[in-house]
Image (cartoon, rainbow, N blue to C red; front, side, top):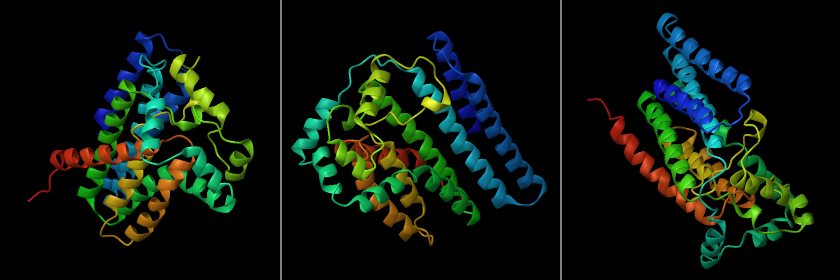
Length: 287
C-alpha cells in the first residue's frame, strides 16, 4: 500500500508538471516526508521494540494520511474540469425522491443546537478513521485493518473517477437559503463558498496549496463511505454501537452541510459495497 501511495504521489507530480499547474510544493513535500517518517517509526518499533500493535497503528496511520495527502494534490490537478457539473440533474433526482435541501435547512434553523451538533459530527470523519485504525491495531485485528485501509483507498479511487467523469459540487452552489437560516445552523457551505466551488470546477485554482484543499467530490459521497467504513469495521468490538449511533447521525449531518445531495449518499453506499467486495478478494483470510 505504501508503494502504491508513492506511485500515486509521483503520478500527481507528473500530472501537475504536464498540465503546467502551479503548486506550492514545500508544504506538500513536508507532509509526504512526515508520512514516511511515521511509517519508518512504525516499522522500527514493530521489528526491534517488540511492539507489533503500536507498529501496526503507526504504519496504518501513515498509509491513511499518506494516501489522503497525495490524492488531494492529484484531485486538484484535475481542475478545471472538462465536463459540466451535473448538480442540476442531481437536484431533480432529489426532488423526485421527495428531498429538498433548503427545506431541510429551514427546519433545522428552528433547532440550532441540534444543527450545530450535526456540524461537529460532520467534521469528525477523519478523526473517526484514525481512531478506528488505533482500535483495530490495539485489538490485533490485522486482517480487518488491512481490509479497512484497502477499502478506503479503493473507494476513494472509484469516487474520484466517477466524479471526474460526471462532476458535482453539492447543492450550496445551486440552491439559495436565507442568510438567517445559514447562521442559525452554522453552515460551512455558504452561497459564497458554493460560488468558489463552481469557480474551481470551471476555472481551477491559481495555485494548488494546502490552504485551498477542501472536499470537492459531491457524487458519490465519500463522507458516506467513511461513515460506513467505521461502522462496518468496528463490528464485533465494543466500539460498534457508539460508531453506529454517531454515523447514523452522519446522514443528516452530511445532508445539512450543503456539500451533498441525497443521491450522493446513495451513491456512496454503492461505492462502499463495491469497495468491500474488491477488498475481500484482494486481501483474503489466511488458512
